[in-house]
Amino acid sequence: MSFLHPEFLYYMSIPLLAFFLFILSRKSSQESCFSDTVMEKLRVSANTLTLKTRNWLFLVVAILMLIALSGPIIDEGTIEVKVKSADIMIALDISDSMLAEDVYPNRLKLAKQKALELLKLAPSERIGVIAFARNSYLVSPLSFDSNAVSFLLRELRTDSITEKGTNFLSMLEVVQKSVKKESKKYLLVLSDGGDSEDFSDEIAYAKEKNIVIFVLGLGTSKGAPIKREDGSFLKHNGKILISKLNENISSLATSTGGVYIESVNSNADIKAMLREIEAHSEKKELKSQEIQRYIPLFYYPLGLALLLLLVATSSVGKRNMQNRVAGLMTLLLFGFSPDANAGMMDFMLLNEAKEAYQTQEYKKAQELYTQYETLNKSNDAQYNRANAMYKQGKFKEAQKIYENIKFDVAQKQAKNYANLGNSYVKVKEKGSLKKAVEAYENSLKLQEDKQTRENLEAVKKAMQEQKKKQEKNKDKKDDKKKDDNKDKSNKDKSDKSEKKDKSDKKDKDSKDDKKSDKKSDEEKSKEEKEKKDKDKQDKKEKKNETKELKDNNSTQQVQAKDMKDKMSDEEEKKWLKMLSKKQSTFLYKLNDNNKFEDNTDEKPW
Image (tube, rainbow, N blue to C red; front, side, top):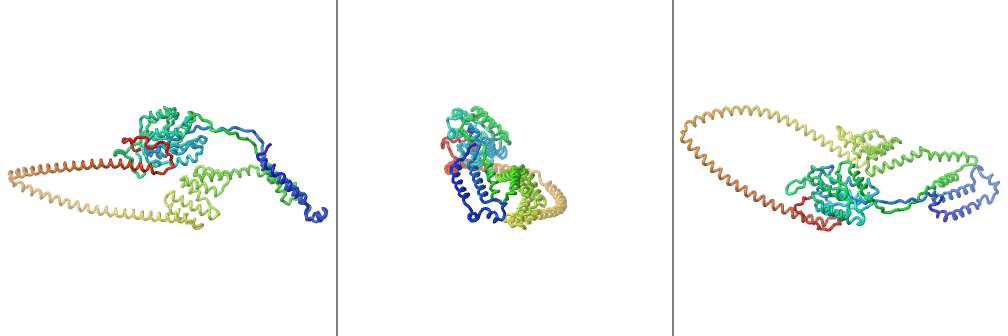
């Protein structure tokens, strides 16, 4: 046996022993005046512990505590712990094409979910993140701190950079600069492949710099339009663009010794990708350390010291000493019984459930509160379980639990009523708003709360609007019925007038026929000829005017279109450069500025 902190024994034993010897050697003021026989007669009861006995017990307690502080252990030798990692860089495409919604919720959000899942599945690996579009930026260097990397990853958006486009060569240069040159580099690319058909330059660069590329393709072969934040779709040359998964990017992975996998909505793809990376990678040793293994023994002297301290500070008589000690031993054994251990485990389970709820892992919190509730039936456990279900959107189930909970404390019951009202509002069933009002009012009767009062007013207002809407719909139906009746009567009248007009027209036509018979054939032919000439002339003039108007309009449209296209290209180029220079972002740009030539035919993603 050895000690972790022997300095306590070296520096504190001698002063401790000297102090207690001084106390034990002193006599009380009464003992200095009277003999032991007289003192025994003067005492109320001679069955209690003497002062000297108590002092000796205190000395033993102090020595045992000193030994516990020194950390007694049984040494089991040392073991060597080695830290190895494959050092994986994740390159995330944040160009505008990643906003396409042919996968749920969209390509960029799905890519971030995949990257976050990889961080959870590989906690022992060093992982870094790169964001790339036209240029590439280092988001996080290689790090074991998965929480920090996850935070930076969640904050990535397509508007983090303003220069549009997808450049894989730029991204590979950032990987080369951010990872040590002498080691083999492993890169996981999460992208839709851009619109490039030839990746020969990228493949040659990756082979030269010893970069193994793994690609997780995001998107579908059918593709989807790119929706902006204002609801409009991204256009190129006046047409809506349809972004599709570029399967040519698979050559970038297979030619460099990596693997290409198309994404799915489940986590099966990222798990398969991690298995492939681990199978192809050569983990290098980062550091090694020897750790001492031992069995701690401090709780034995500490427990004995507490037991003796309890005896020394009690009024236990000599005759009842054996019975009291036996009782204390029974109590000590009961403390280590399974029931006591179960109570400790229940406390740990409750703490774990609270932590899961605070970290927004509501499903896990619900399961843990359910386990706790089976072991300890309490209203608090039911209430917390209902809150976890409410956070998951299970409003109906949470509502049933809130209805059955009855707290003795008014403050807790008021909160329960408030949450019950919220669940009624969320369920949106017939009469649920009325029940919500009743629940809020019950809560406010027990305890006044600003948020509950605001919720009550909002629900009442919603009920009034709903009532007005119903009355309005009813009035519309009545008006429609009246209009239908009115239309019916008007139709009958119109039918009668129509019959009368038809008869009058018939009579008039017969009269005109008689008049026209009286005209001579010569006058008819003359009038017809003049009429035809006039019609021809009018048509000719009208045709010329229309042609001139069309020509003018087409000329104006072409000029306007040319001017519009010219202005938009210049303005876009100007403002994008300004924004790229002046923007503030947490991304650190590693590749050179203006290195890549602008392509006028390039698609705006």
